[in-house]
Length: 340
Image (cartoon, rainbow, N blue to C red; front, top):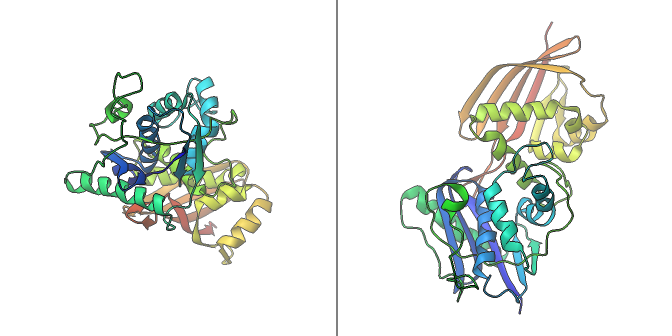
């Protein structure tokens, strides 16, 4: 009989107090977390723990419901390529969350697992149950209260060979030991040997999950202002400006722009026109000011030189708060003025 479970992660602040959970029914679920982690770490750990929790029943197919295309693609598409490259991405940089990825690669071996994407926060019963439990753990770490662990999966205390226990968060992340939890998942074997990178696979229903992973990497050891500066530079690159899918990830749904001529353009205007306009060519960016207006807003002012034209640019980057989780940085407003 197929085991069906939802796996989800949560981070308050992303990064911040984090939780993960998988859920089959009210009598079969598990949750854990860390004092400091990211949403993607939680999503990956939920799947890993689910796989380990069902390792004693290898003959039963697993069906994993997940609202993160980043996680699904990492396991089913990109992991084989990363592994062949020594767990490096196409650009030579280390894969993010590499210890979790390695553990997932080992846990998937010989398993009959099928992943199914579901839209998050859309009323799906199993997904909502996993989400509630993951957020409860994150909140417990934030407030210093005991974190709910759940009953786990019957018979999953030890591996099939009778030795050892499930992979701990300390082994994976070199972090304080999280609330231990048991995983239970099912997914198809890894698919094509591809590594599309942070912004590829544009037609996935969860476009922002890959952007979050990209920003998670950018933000390591950086301030919000420094992260936003890198994202602004991304928007000036010709390959990004020519790609409506990538542009759409970086522009807020309510984005608006006032051009040097005084013209006003909406997000739809920019997505329609910018890919068809000539590229800027070589540019020089001199940041004048990067002001953090709060935990979820940065105002960036810079001088842009492109050819013989110099302009002053002002950008407002924001992160939306949804269910106590901050999403990716996106450009909310931009204005440019030519210098005389």
